[in-house]
Structure formats: structure tokens, C-alpha cells
Image (tube, rainbow, N blue to C red):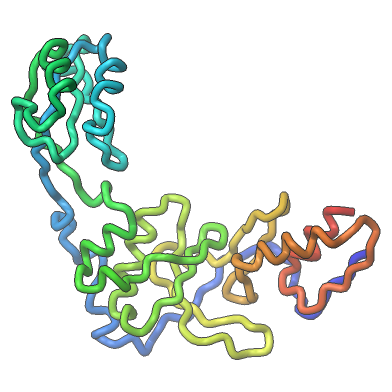
Length: 273
């Protein structure tokens, strides 16, 4: 037997609920909207040096060049079908290598490349908004806040939950939209409006970006927990504590989970038998 109580829920079909709009939003708070921004500010062209090689020698050159190859997130250092021919590849070099004569490479590597490659050429690499991580995108937008800018969030199912401090409220819609655009598994971004100060420890939230769908499905310990985030108290950071407690439970033990919330500990304990 496992008993758990203190907060009761109607076990009905999940529904999409509306969170009241923030009618008190000021002009300052909404002075930036993602849709109004010119995303070309993220565009950048980097002139890189590439080495032309036969495709069959690609592995050899990848090993030879080692740390002198281009290492950028989301971007391969290998160019395929050079001059429209699948028999040739290009190896992009690190940004620090700027001369086509490869004089910036160590002598032994340079001599081997010059002996075995088909020459060098310049390759303009264009990066845009899609290249940037959420953190880097926000730093690019707000460089004056690069040291303190908030880009972390709690993930609850498909919902990203932020707790922005006052100095970032005027950027809230942009921050929300960047997080939404940069995390394909996130469909809803919300911000906590006020401190938790009621009996059931729920909090008011406002929609920053995405769908107003607050029915979250959270996976933990082999269990699927479904709940409406706007109506319950939830903290993903308590999972390690639940993991710790469960190690002290044994089969057929009676557990009274007071103030269980949606019952993550109770459900996982019941699963143990």
C-alpha cells in the first residue's frame, strides 16, 4: 500500500489552457520583439584556406592536419565535390591559418601537404543565425550584458521555464524567442511573474514565445508524469533528492508522501512494488 495526499487533481483529459496576458507590460518591457529584428546582424563571412585533395586520401589528411583543421560547431571541415567532381575533397584549415603558402603550418606538416595535395584555395564561409548557440546568439544581441545575460532555463517536458531578473525583463520576448528557435524540442517558453507565495506553491507565469500549451509530460525513473504546469508546483532540480530517497525504500513498505504535489516520488515508489 502506498498512500499519498495533500493536493488533489481532477483526472480528466488534458486541455490547453490560457495564461492571462500581462496587461501591465510597459513600452520599455516590450521594446524588442524577435520578429522586428534584422537577423542579418548575425551574418558573417570568414575567409578560410582549404587544401584540395583526392577523396581517397581524405582520412590521411584529416589525421595529418589534426588540430590545424577547422573546428566549428555544426560545420564540417570537409568540402565535397570540389569543382563539381566527386573525386576531390577540400579540407578547411583553422582560422589562424591565413596564407595560401601554408607558411603558418609546422614545417613537417607543410612539406607533406605540399607533396601530397593538389594545392590550396580560398573558401569564403558564411555563417548566420542558425550557426549560433542560444548563449552566443544572446551575447551577440546584447554584448553589453555578455557577462551576466541569463540563458539558462528549467526544462519541463516541452516547456522552457525562465526566472528572469528585473534587468532582463525588457528583453524577455527576444530571449524567449531565441530559446524557442534554438531548441527544436521546446514548444513553449514561459517566465515566472512573481514569487511563490500561495498555499499550493504555484506561480503566475507569462508566455514569452511559442504555443500556450502548459500540459507537460515529464519522464523520470521510467515513469511518465503529465500535469498542467500553470496549476501545480514542480521543480525538476529535486529529482536527485527523489533518487536518493528511493534508495532507502524497500518492497511492500508503506510510504506516506505528505505534500506530494503531482506525486513523482509516490508514483516511482509504487513502481518499485
